[in-house]
Image (cartoon, rainbow, N blue to C red):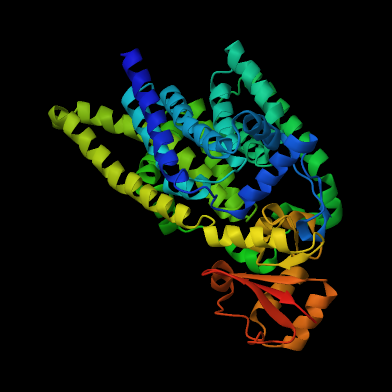
Length: 494
């Protein structure tokens, strides 16, 4: 039976890989500009041994502060396997989450069927597909590590898992600042145990203190300068005020149901109620700690909404395994026991309808949002036909394309954390794209030494425009130097 279940887990893992690869291999491009920023740093390591802590192109040139281990990790694979590593490696680690979900669920419930169902669901959480598919992101690695560390903490008495927890405690903060979420989760875990008068194991207590100390120390080292330059704005990543409203938006029950899935939410709540309030399981307290920490950070707008929803989705999926286990036990002691397999099959059909189909739909949208040939060749044109010190104006969401593909200076991009007067610069971009005043726009373009304006369908959609109103045909101050079906590039002449 154990070998049979191992095969099922392996099958779920390969289903996850095949599902993701089916979509990511449909395009040679990626679905967000941050992926290209990350690739630029990975390539910098391959060429000069370190990422671009001093980027001469972002915001026209800026010092940047970030944990670099993910870039080194991807550099290793790209060195041996080339560009295909950018597509495949994130897929493998995101698919491994299904294995970790199974291990944690099995530890919580001791029920193979419940653990397998939760593992299968974790492959198709809609928000996870939307936020991680076809992207080169440190989340692909840090998500797997965080939940594997949770499992290691559950098995901390085993020397192997203790060693893994210690090693990963050092590595995780070097990969991504999301490491702080696990710190807060572990604090909540300890508080919850104390409130319920459940004694915290000494070894677990020492492991938690070690992790919190290491993560705070590492993040302080990398982001000290950001706090010096930006003060408390660094906590909110210095995001422009107008973007902040959507970036850290309020959470709603309806959105949770759609992005996470009603089955995970309902059975996750049932699992938490049984595990925390009735049976007082340590392992469930740990998952509950992650849920509470994520919910608090979302409420205080201290974490990106989409990232928070991903953590909630995976955590509730794990907690739902306990709800499934209680359901299966209840069926066995009632008159419905003869229909147990039929009920399980019906539950699987509901999962297919509420998880697999929405995930398939979301995946299609993610791929359709990937960079297009038109856009890519526009950036190649900029690279081949403009001076090396040229500054290009684009929307913030396309700035990393400018610096990474066109290899030219961006007036603005999404590296907000590294620029002081971000609100002013954001308003300048908005004014130039939306204004009807040619005189004022030219003043701003001259002030910031902007030589080219990149206008795409994405920019038009973001700013609600059809064209730049003050640029006319045969304009003496602007010349359209490149055009495709979806992009236009204008050169400033005066």
